[in-house]
Image 1 (cartoon, rainbow, N blue to C red):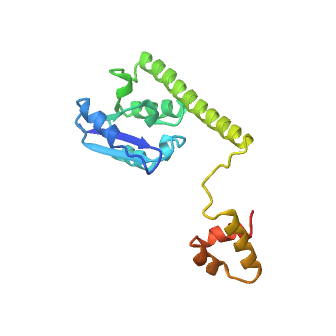
Image 2: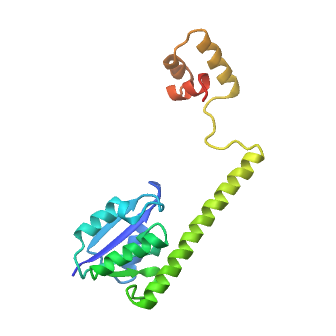
Length: 188
């Protein structure tokens, strides 16, 4: 019987290699490795590599993940995923939980509690982020990327545009994209 492992990261700047290394260094020989680069808000059933894993894994085989949140976006999704895997008699190992049989009554209870805590942590993180953004905005801080043009350059761009200069010519002149020029001359 084969051993499958799954990892997930949220951004392209991240890599799931550490998750694979963690699984292998815990003594598991991974036969098939799958990893998604997708937001944790996406349910397990909508993750391309997780869906591919589910089509290849056979009944009675093993699936290993480093953390519980790799199996779903919230407590309900994690529970549904584990239930689906248990119905196929797929052994699910979550390194974060140690040697816990997720299909047993105690395992199901622990799984539900931990998934709920993970969901709450994610919700709190979102809440803190939104609160921080609101505070920064209230303090008058400019959010987002810094402008590629100075206020003086923007004034020049508007003047030249009203005199008939094309967007493409202005983009070449100021070494910025056409979209940048359009944002200056035709703000939303």
